[in-house]
Image (cartoon, rainbow, N blue to C red):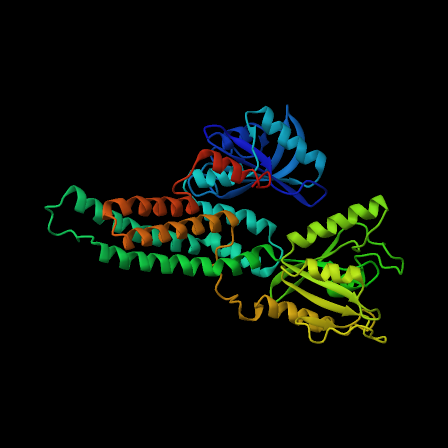
Length: 449
C-alpha cells in the first residue's frame, strides 16, 4: 500500500458533479501538480479549495478539491476528492490526468480494503459498507449502518475475549502449575464456560435469520399453468404494469420481476413462464427457467384458475412444491368457481379484476415469515452469509467440545478446539484472515469505494 490510487467514486454519466477520489502517500502532491489555485501542500486538512484541473497549462475543468490528511480519513491515508462537473468526458479526462501523473487506478473496493488493512474498520464494518450501497429498504439501510457503527463487532469481540480468558487460564495451569493465584480450570468449570459461550453463539445465530431477511429480502416465485393469471397477479401485487398480460396462453416466456416492501422487508416477486408440456423451443426454455426458479425461491405461490377443475398439470405442480414453503392463490373468484380446496392449508381466494384477495395475500406473506414480531428497533443482527457460515462452524466446534467433556478428555486437549473457535470468530471481524480471502471479498465492491 505504498502507492497512490485513484478512481471515480460517483456513477459515471450526466450529472451535476462527479467525484474522483485519490488516496495514498502522494495523494496531495499529485493533485497539486495538476491543480491551479492554492498550494494544496500548504492548506489545512479537511478544507475545500476552489480552482481548476489543468493539463499542460490547459484548463480541463473548474473544480472543488477536498483535502483530508491522514490519519483522520476514510483510509487513514491522505485522501483528496476532486469534485468536477458531471459528465463522462470531463470526468474521464480528470482521471486520465491523475493516472499520467503518478496515480494507479484503484481496484474494486480498494479504498475500503485500505481502511480495513490500516485498522480503521474491521471486516464486519467493511462488508456492511458494500451492503449499505446495495440496500433497497429503510430496514436494510439501518441494519448496514448499525454494523458499520460497530455494535455487532463489539458483540463478537466480547465473546472472543471471554474465550481468551479461559485459554489464558488453561495455559497458566499447564505452564505454571505452582502459580497458586491462577484459577484452576477443571472440567466442571470448563463445562460452565462452554454453556455460556454456546448460549451467546445461539443468540447471535437466532437473529441471523431475521438479519438475512432484512438484508436480502424474500424471493417469491409465482408459478402455474399458462393463462391462470400469474402476470396479472404480479402487476397487482407490485401496483405496476410490469408483466405483459394477454389471454393468449404462453405469453410469458421469460421471468419478470417486481418488488414491494412489507413491514420493512423487500419481497421480490418473480412471474414465471406457464408450466406445461410444449414443443415450442423458446417456451420450453421458459418452462425450464420456471422450474429452476422454484428451487431458488424462499416461497412459491401456486396460481390456479378457479373457474376450471384441477388438471393433471395443476396436480403435478402442486406435487412439485410439497417440500417447499408454499401457498395457493385461486384466481378468478369473481366468476363461478369449479375448484374446491377449502380444506387445504394456506389457500387464498381472489381475483385481479377487482383485486379481491390481494390484501389477504399480503397479510398471509407477513404471517408466514413472522414479520409482525420482527424487531426493527434493534438492528444488532448478523446478515452476511460468510459470517453466518463461520458462526455455524463455531457452533459445531462447541458440540465437539461438549462431547469431549462427556468423554472426560483432558482439558489441554479440549483447549485445541477452543482455540479454533477463537480463531473462527476472529475471521468474522478480520482479526485473523488469509490474504486470498480478503482479495476475494473486496472484488465484490464497486470501483471507487
